[in-house]
Image 1 (cartoon, rainbow, N blue to C red):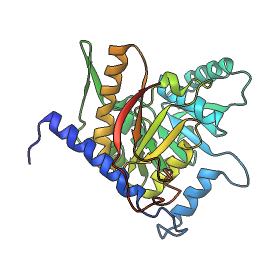
Image 2 (cartoon, rainbow, N blue to C red):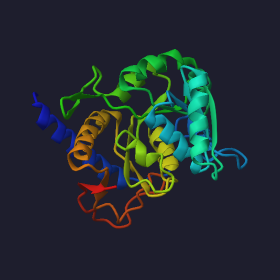
Image 3 (cartoon, one colour):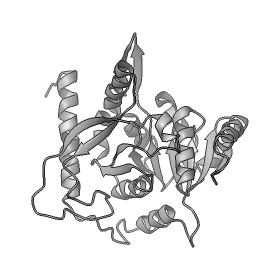
Length: 297
């Protein structure tokens, strides 16, 4: 079946809303042996840390605005972060800048090469979109069996418009999953402005859409996101929905440009259920339809 570009995006957006409703109405208890190979136990331990120690994450390509902002926010909620880069000296410079900006906060951020960041229990790829799969391939040996989140969007600027690009596999996240068949890839955090993410004086406004072909990966990333003040993690179904989420970021950026502000995505109609995917199903039998809206951040 053939869809025009606009119709395809609307169809994908409807699919995301439907996926959220279905996931919210399902039981989200995670059996300890959910994968049959101990993966669920390992991810649970990585999410909460072991013996009271902080959650450890590595950010590959973390010296750009998005990666540095995420490292700042993750460290502020108690995570221990390795900020990776192609150059460890560039990583050292960015880490020093973060710590100088927030001297009163106990931020555990360590500089290192991408290969060092890839050795952490959970990894985020924050490179430009066209380098995500290539960089993932370079450190693939360190990523087997791990949750790997991608936060890149395939976008281009044409004159004063932001235009979504569709990679060959449909999304950046799908390309990374194809490159890392033994990893649990999730798409998340693509639509959160770096400025707001890295500003620790303000909460993170809006919902964080997460999708993956691995429920364990969605649960794990959602558990971390839900610790961020003001953020709400939403399980948006399989990785196929990353196409719509990545493309919709162009719309948000266009709104920022047109109205000279920052907008955040918030879905209404889900307040009657425990939204965290770790929390279970709806509190009543009837579910209200979810409606997308944007709110100023």
